[in-house]
Length: 350
Image (tube, rainbow, N blue to C red; front, side, top):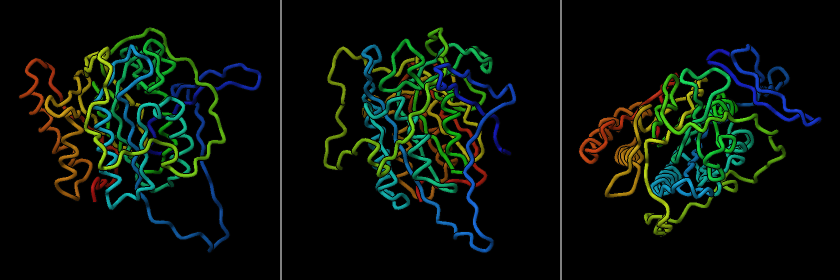
């Protein structure tokens, strides 16, 4: 298991209804699924060419009306998905969009446990773009220095119930199902620097730690990758208009949002985040795009052959400069962050 920082086992419900408690990596035990194929000597099948997959996850609306809407996030994920769908390096069938109602906790679990493991193979490249809200809750297993776990907020999340959210511990465990793939996470959320290892964000503390998860519902077999997600609007659709038609929602990327998957520690996984651990991630005043997403799209459309690290290095000063010039009231600023995990660079736009 060289290259792994640690593993986590989720709690599950047994046949007798008793919940088996989670086993933390600190206790020296973990369970991991490994698929082994054997072949007669001299009959090993020829290695297939690696493929690239793109997953866009965007949340601009939430079922809980206490969670304010984020119109920019819908534009972010639609335009990013459209770019990769039209990329010559990605087959259109290998692009998945999970937007709003499709981005539920159960669907995100299925994404990592069923969908991506089924449609990808070791050696493939996977780019996952996420834009939306986050929060934090009390840590009970002692692996967080500040006493909090970070969570991702999903469409069906309840604002005051961290069990309906995805903790960093959960997400790190789920991402282990993509081992042996080359995975790039691009995360545009407030305090998203907390997504990288050894970084923390600030946010709401709900006080109650999440309980163990129920058993995964097995037997999910989508016919195609796209059949699992949302349809991408056609290029002729007016997708640049705000989806926020309810004036009771207040659009705001506020300081109470954070989002962390710092437990993504396995080899061959890199993370680009939109802000450092104590910073907000802002929206362009004149365009209603998230600042980092806008500059990423600008770079990817402007020149081909950019590596993941070059992309980070190019957008970092642009994001900081834009925020400094347009958000004089934001004393914290916004610094794009980066966690390297690749042995060889990924060309984001071949």
